[in-house]
Length: 94
Image (tube, rainbow, N blue to C red; front, side, top):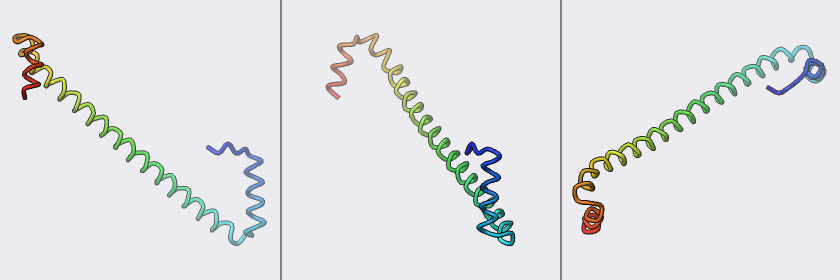
């Protein structure tokens, strides 16, 4: 994820040990782990919500397209019988 190698991780651990000391390091590691877990849950929840919203948008667009096609199919017999010119005139008169 962060592309951190083994030696970089060891260097970070040594620096944290020197700064925090051996008494506070376990609590800091636990708190950091909790923070990372909460951040991951937040990101996953946000991603799921965005995907769900995107799917709803696609569903609405698809529904509109289907309604438009249904309307065109209902008008098709009139266009065949009356001809295109008559249907266009009827639409203008409406």
